Length: 164
Image (cartoon, rainbow, N blue to C red):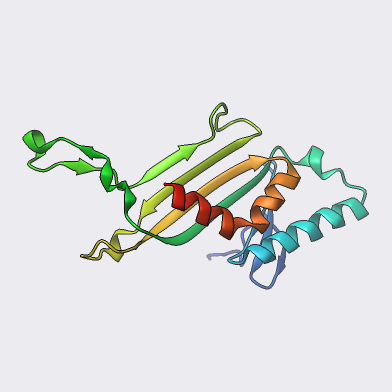
């Protein structure tokens, strides 16, 4: 006999396609949706519900963290960083993906920002126009800063990607 749970065990609530889960091992509350407005709304609703129930959620959570996975179009600007390897490989290399982390902090700190930009190779185009990239972000900070980040994610990402 095979028993398959219909939902992962950490899910504590759902609203439409928005999932809310609590990971007891990491002590994190996660809100997952394809729409940043839904994430922001669920975040506020959950926080208000915990306050109404007199639950100090800040003691139950380790950090306040946003994890974002997005798809973006970006001109391949990494091509300026050429590595001379023709004598070893027969061709030179260039940087095709990038990762950046907040200066002065580390992945285990309560304040951490990490962004990784990865080309989606199946979107290869033979021109120098924009290509598809997967964007992965981990942002850990105070509740208000995380909420502001989530609410403005599209503008923040656009500005960050223009700087790369």
